[in-house]
Image 1: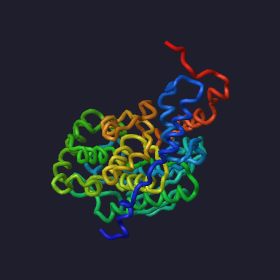
Image 2 (image 1 turned 60 degrees about the vertical axis):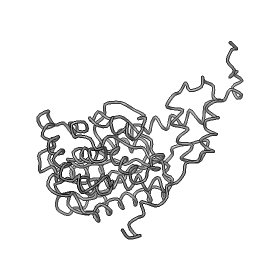
Image 3 (image 1 turned 180 degrees about the horizontal axis):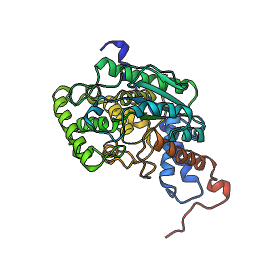
Image 4 (image 1 turned 60 degrees about the horizontal axis):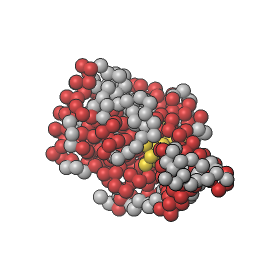
Length: 356
């Protein structure tokens, strides 16, 4: 590895423990029983430590959708044709997709990045085209991408995080789009956790039970093919069975942790990217909030591995950053309550309990 490409090993920023302590003290003074607002309290406290202030806030959310196609669709593992990836890119940019509506609702900046999709050259307004390669290779038969292609995808994520920070964003959401990418994410999870596809594979965009059994078989065979060559190395695992968009999300998460930009992780695929980031740099985990527990089978197992407490549980399984985007509302509410509730002293309410 040259110096040029090892940016992802640069140090991770430390959360501000003084700000965290001050936020905890403030919560103890607010007019409510201690801990009565549950996860809304812990969310505000975590964000305080990440933003380095006793009064955390979200004014400028940033959402990047990373897209990429997957060669493994040749194995007939998806309910939808590959062409949908490209079609959805246009839908994101024109405002018709769920995440587009969520971004508009939160007045968030929405960036759409094509990391490598299949098809002719195109020019869609609002889509940044960086065709590292026209989709990954079929990982059931060979490595999905070369090490250099994987590093190029990581770099796309880095660039998005740097741009978000430069433009004054205070929280970062990564979403993904790529037909076949739950298959890739399940294969990644199998190799990262050393567990079987049966435990980590779900219905994705809506395949039937027969197709699910086929998908599990394809993943198990791919894991058997690649395991001897990847030896618990997260970057090698990403290159072997990952997606360009999943590698880009991994790069974005690592860079956010390096530059001090809090992250809201989305669903199953995003959480697998978060796990890749954590395996590369364990301290990156501290910069992550987890938007939701999705309905995709296997997500619960990944959240457990990440020791994550998801903010929402609403049976979402759309991807594209939608669960993390929905969770922004709760994170903003956590901040508003933390900052605007009166203290016992301000409200002239006694905070002392009756003596036993």
